[in-house]
Image (cartoon, rainbow, N blue to C red; front, side):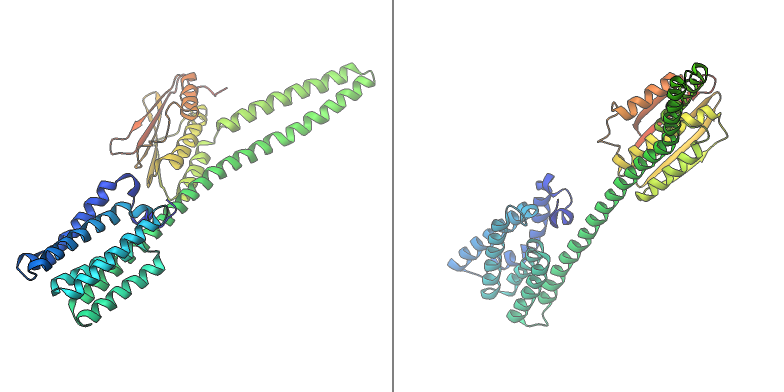
Length: 374
């Protein structure tokens, strides 16, 4: 939510009854003016009018709580109208009735702190405290309460706004980490293919010249070189895209750690014993895909990579403490393609909820049947 209240009241749009409950709890402190009514502090027609005004005040206050997430947007006029009505009732009742009704000034301070933009809210809280002091004297406890409760609301608003900004920055860092990974892959492809394509172009020119010079044997040699370089380029490109270059598991784990830490996610890595080079190459791709999914979907604070050898099987387990990846499709192209690659070497892929919450990915590869991905 772009407006400040989206931070002040997390999930406000989706939990209106929660807001109403909080507003209702706050109204418990109306027991002071209510006690004054029940004790006979106000009698006759004045008591009826005061009771009606108090009920109206409570209804207006609950309505303000109900629409608070939209006060700064499409319901600005209604919010200001409600705040004005609350202010009018609070000032009129507190000024004309007993001291117990001064509690309404605290409600007015909180309402101003909630419903107004920050700069106006500060002025509104201060003005309410000054007005309460003018009614009963600056040394009365109700003046301090009016000021303190209003300032607490403003402090929570500010703190929550900072939290929202930090969450937005964290999401941005995660996006940048994913983008950096894509840029790294594009650089790898450029480095791999740039030289080889130049060689192919040169060999092609030489073959054409030899053909023009009627030297078929030399031209055939150059064409064979073109075929060899083209096949090698295709092989290297596939390895770069799939992350299967030999000896790349340690490097991939290092890149995963850097990307996760850049996204403010603690990374823990445990490796139990060496594995064959072909198996490490396949697991390197699993690490890359798992780290990308954690950054994009998990909202985790911690992610653990465990690589171990169980009898004749290599296992890679990735667990995070996030939200269980609700936005992650386990049948999407990433995980589905990963499962297919593992199946090609006799391996399996398991994904689902972790035992302690969050998301868990477990890849298994039989050491006896693992071969380099093609």
